[in-house]
Amino acid sequence: MHQNDKNAPLDKDTTKIILDSISDGVFTIDYNWKITSFNRAAEEITGIRRQDAIGCHCWDVFRSNMCEQGCALKKTMDQGKPFVSSSAYIINSRQKKIPITASTSLLIDKNGDVLGGVETFKDHSVVEALRKELTGGVRVEDMVSNASAMKNIFNILPQIAESDSSVLIEGETGTGKELMAKAIHNTSHRKNCPFVAINCGALPDTLLESELFGYKKGAFTHAVKDKPGHFALADNGTIFLDEIADTSPAFQVRLLRVLQEREYTPLGGITKERSNVRIIAATNKNLTNMVENNEFRQDLYYRINVIKISLPPLRHRMEDIPYLVDQFISRLNLRRNKNIQGLSPEVLAAFMAHDFPGNIRELENIIEHAFVLCAKEFITMAHVPPSLAAESRPESGEHKNPVVAAQIKMITDALKRNNNNRNAAARDLGIHKSTLFRRIKKLGIRL
Image (tube, rainbow, N blue to C red; front, side, top):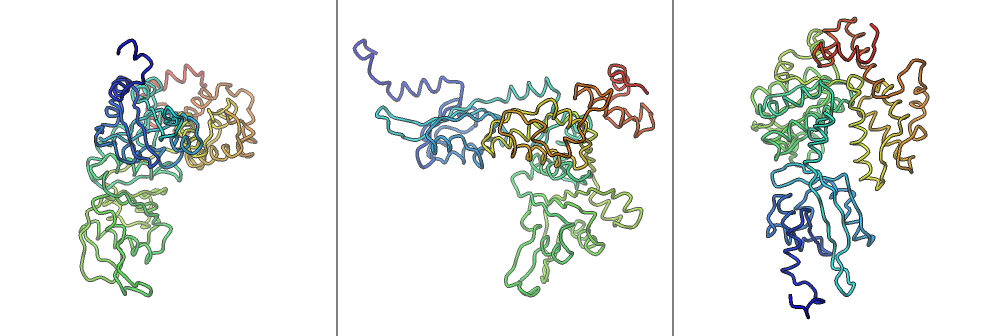
C-alpha cells in the first residue's frame, strides 16, 4: 500500500487473508441467521467447505448444543453485547463432537450500523484429550467415568455397537441405562436412523402392543385411521425397551415371536410387516432370578440377553462424582444462563459420604436443586437439600480430604461385601489385587 493510502480501509481481499491466517474459527451472520463469511479455520474445525456454509443457517452448519438453548450469538443479537460460552460443542461433518469455547459480538460497519453478528470459536479437542489423560476420566457420548468398572464397559462398547446383537442392560434405577443404550446406538452403523425408547412398565398390554406394533383403521373404537407403531418408526434404527421385566407373560410371547421372525402384524391388520430394528432392553431387576422363579420367559431372556451390560450403582463408583458434577453444572449453566464454578469442599465431602440410593439421577436432582438457590460462584451447604446437609456432619476419625475419604469408603465397602476376601474385593472394584493391596497400605485401612 502506498504511503498516502495509509488511512484507507482494508479491502475485502486483505480482510479475507487476515481472517484466514487466524487459528480460531470465525464466521459472521446476517439478521436472518444466515452465514455471510466463513474463514479457513472454521472450514478445518467443522469439515465443511466455505462455499457450502455461506448462505446456510448457522444451526444447520454447526449443530451445536448451544443451538437448542443458551446460544451466545442469539444473546448478543438480542442484548447488543458480547458473550462467551466455555461449555459448548459442535458436531463436525464426520459426526464427531468437538468441544469448543465461543465468543460473540455484534458486526458493525464504519457508520455504526449493525449488520449482524460475529462469532469466533476455538477447538478444544486436544485440551480435552489431555485432560482425560491427566485425570483418567473417560467420556463416551453423554457418559463420563473414572471408575474401572465403567472403563471396562467403555472399552468394549465399540465392539458391542458394531455387533448389531440384542443387548440387555441391567442396573439400579438412575444408573444411566438409557444413556448407555443411546451410546450404543450412536456409535453403531444405525446412528443415522431413529432411536425410539418406550417404558414397558408404564403401559398395559393393549396399549403397549399398539404403541410398538401400531394399528389399522377400525381395529378398535376411535381407531379412525392407520397408525404406525414404534417398530415401523424405528425402521433400520434401535428400539429401547425399558423395564422389560414388568411386561406380562402374554406380551412376552408376542415380543418373542417378533424377535424370532423379524416381522409383526399391526393390531387389526392381516398382513405381516418386516422389521429391521436392533433391540436394547433394560431392567432394574435381576432377570436371571426371575427366570428361575418362572416370573420371566426363559426363551425371551436368552433372545434379549445376547450381550449383557451391568451398570454399577453410584455408591460403587464414587470417584465419578466430581466428573458428573462438572458435567451437570456445565449443562445447567447453559440452560439457566448462570456461571456457577463448582462445589464448596463441604458439599463435595457430603456427596462423598452419601450412599445415593437414587444413583446418578439423584445427584443430578441435587445439583438442579442447588442451582435454584445458588446466586454465587460456588454451591455451598446452604444450597443442597436439608436432608443431605443433616447427614453430612463428620464423624470422629473421618478423613478430612473428601476424595481420600471416598476411596477408603469404596474399598471398605467392597471388602465388607466380599467378607474381607481381598481377591474378590479387587474383582468387585475392577482392579488388580496387587493394586488393591497397595491402596489399602497407602490409605492405612485396617482389616
